[in-house]
Amino acid sequence: MSEKRIDVVRPGELGADDRKMWREIRAASAAPANPFMDPAFTAAVGRVRPGARVAVLREDGFPIGYFPHERGLAGRGRAIGLGVSDSQGMALRVGVRPDVHALLRACALSSWEFDSLEAGQDLFLPHATEELASPVVDLGDGYERYAQDLRRSSPGFVKQTLAKERKLARQVGEVRFVYDDPDPGALRALMRWKSAQYRRTGRRDRFAQAWITRLVELLARSDDPECRGVLSVLYAAGRPVAAHFGLRSPTVLSWWFPAYDRAYGKYSPGLLLLLRMLDAAAADGIELVDLGSGPARYKESFKTRDLRVNAGAVVGPGPGGALYRLGREPVRATRRFVRDRPGLARAAARTLEELGRLRER
Image (tube, rainbow, N blue to C red; front, side, top):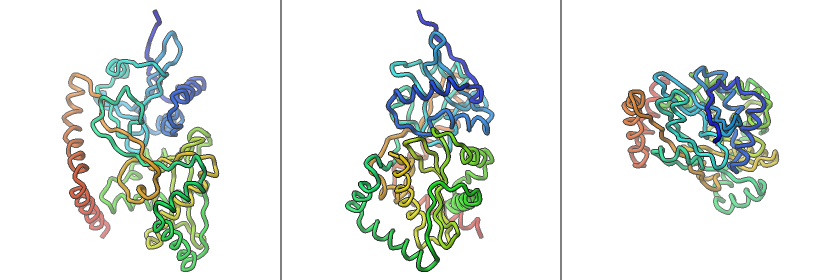
């Protein structure tokens, strides 16, 4: 009979062999090479989140799975980087299916929450409470093929966007795009714009949380080809007017933190940036751009299809699980209620935006 055990370690304690095995398990699963699912992302989170852990599942001493997670008070667990990670789950050898509650016990977790569970993570799917659409752009056939399809499906959208680029050049100055910009000043500008957008729309400012800022700065300096940051910037007359910071693997680019200078809003610089970025990404070997879940009209215009991701939680028995249900289930129920009623969702968004404007005065 084979010997099975689970070792729980800090991300920084994983060696080169574990990172190699993690990646081999992921590759064998045939899932897209999403950078959020790479051990380098977990390692980066481990440097800024003290509760970050990885459960290493072994059979006869050989690794068969890796479960990255964060552990909080009363054993309350969450997906690694929850709140900013756009793809969540675990790396598990094909054919292996551990008992999910035994896994939580081994990790000293009373619950494990996720909000972007990767498609194909069947171990956790029975515990999902919401299914969300995550739009993607397929670039496997190259940008020209994608652009032809986009012009066919949305001719007015493409024409108007390109016309705004010409107008920006005429009225402001030369338009220039940099796909992988090393300028830290442009990254700081992006963070300022994004913080202002969060406050303006009544959402929690992610960059007011020190760990998120530090995580972005770490990934911006990474040179790991399996998971590193890419800063794309649109300039007009030599100054940045829109920027995006995302994560990439060799074939997948995740659309993560986009923002623009509102002084140039009439030119739709964010749309111009995305169009230019898709072209450059395809030329750089990117086959899939994941736009992430969450409603946005522009995503509907650019996408080629939707992936399905899930939100929910595995909740164990006992006091810790009961505390989780008391604290989170009413919030999730309210969110589902609003999301399932588009009119109510729009009204709520308008109210939040008005509150944000009031705070700016």
